Amino acid sequence: MQRSADPMPASPRALRLRLADGEPANARDAIAPAVLRSWERTQRAGLRPADRALFAPTPSTLACRRLEDEHRALIDCATPDMQRLHRSLGSPNWVVLLANARGTVVGSVGHERAAVRELREPLRIGKDLREESIGTNAPACVLTEGLSTSVIGAEHYLDELQHYACAAAPIRGPGGDLVGVLDATGWQVHPERELLRRVTLSARSIENRLLHALPGVAILQLHHDERLLGTPMEGLLAVDGGGRLVALNGMAARMLKRPGLQPGGLALPDLLPDDATALMAQHARAGTSPRFVRAADGTGLFARWNGVPSPTKATKARPPLPPALPPLDGDLPLHAQLERALRVVEHGLPVLVQGETGVGKEVFARHLHHHARGEAPFIAVNCSALPEGLIESELFGYVDGAFTGARRGGAAGKLAQAQGGTLFLDEIGDMPLALQTRLLRVLQERAFVPIGGHRNVPLDLLVVAATHRDVPALVKAGDFREDLYYRLAGYVVHLPALRERGDLRGLIERELQRIDPQAQLAEATWQRLLAQRWPGNLRQLVQTLRAAVALCDDPGRVLQPCDLPALCEHAGAAAEPLGLAPPAASSFTEVKRHAIEAALARHHGNVSAVARELKLSRTTVYALLQRRGPRP
View 1: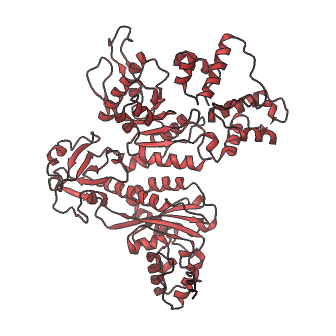
View 2: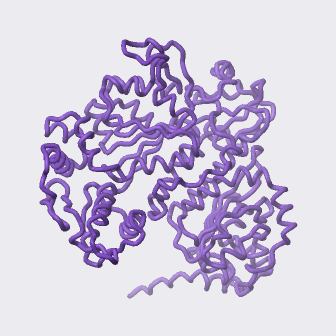
View 3: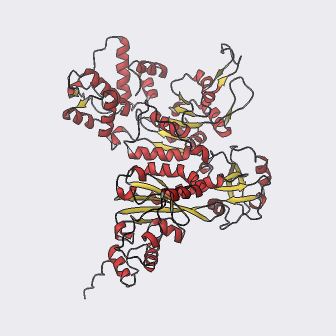
């Protein structure tokens, strides 16, 4: 006997209509329980799917200003994370909303620049997001359920919301009470799987800022993993001068295995009995190295007094992007990497940028510096270009009379020059082992001693390292210290090769406009450029376009394939000329330079390998390459 097929689950819209007509929901229908409960509450509030409520008038301008004034502390703490979250979404079809505990929008980022009126007009300050106002939506579910929630498309109760997607997370104050909701809402978008997690992490970061903003307390950071101190995943204890607990976040309660913990009457010895005395001795020294401690139940944790910038510092306006710094906004994955790295560095962690030669590691680092440290110094050190005998004095500096030939009065090293800003350690994979040991100590103690000196100099800087080499492989081979690698790799960014980027055509257009705004590319030229593998990546592309502009004789500035210089594919591939053959070498120096360029292509840009093959020093290789013009 043939079994009949199970009936197909009803669509969300059909289920909503059935529910509105008084029919019970069926458990087999694929609707999240939280959404189904929200539908039922919305129905009890008297709304029908066909009702229109989204474009209802919002309060007057004066009333909106009063809302902002009433919630100023929450808005100030939330704004940096809202801006970062909105930038990471990478589309004008998203807005980020901040609602208070009553479901009223008190802050909004992106609605004024939104691509459609459906985001610009209804999602302003003063909008009521409660279920009884506009039916099922993520912020409304959070207000009732207290948990992070996403509501996509037809999961909304009202038909007019079917083209929206939203993900929201609760924001709890230092006392544990719900003080607001963070939400990301998009119009006709397909949310990525990680959206709800990203919104939730942003909400946790806001909660941490609220706790940091408490007056008269010191903040003790906790985590099982030392590298996650200073991130939204850390636990926080707010302690007064006498060691009494004033407040804590939910992560701290979970790490201490005391869920629902309330601070009333508790002191630090109640939570960390064996280590409270030693920790209180460091009470006034924010930013000290993490200390391994044990909770009352024996759980091991790393603890450190707060060294995180205050919310007021984080909300300062950043200076405009320097004209010489190429924008990153053409490549959304790259932009998203920048946003994630920014979140990390603003909590004091170092960043390691990895990628092939020429992908723009220094450009990425400068963007990171610009957004995190503004107009403070950006000091770059090429760890492979400096002779081993000089790199230590270049990095640490020296005092008067430190060694024979030392400059009178001493000299400030790169560490001192970078104070308050960013130290960029390029080609960190080529740093000598002896110097790696000293650098590790600097990163651990956040202080250094100049050569010939006797006093520690405290450090306040962001450390960004970069390399094209496989550092874990170097660690395995014993050529790079494992402990230094984990110190530098607080967050690892992998920059894609030019051939892997999805915005190559747009990137070529932008670079060509920067070089010559009047220049255009013939279709055949486009085909040649897009077909290349670009072993030298962005640097090679820019140099190719510069050469093509210089060689173009067309009065209309249309670049033809014959204007393109020769390019060589990477190792193992034969040279595939794009146009002109390499010019005849006019000197022995030119012969060496061409040999170096060919070797660079064979070794994927590895300068050390090129130097070994040609039996030249790395300094000589760099010196000869410098003569072909400035790096892009």
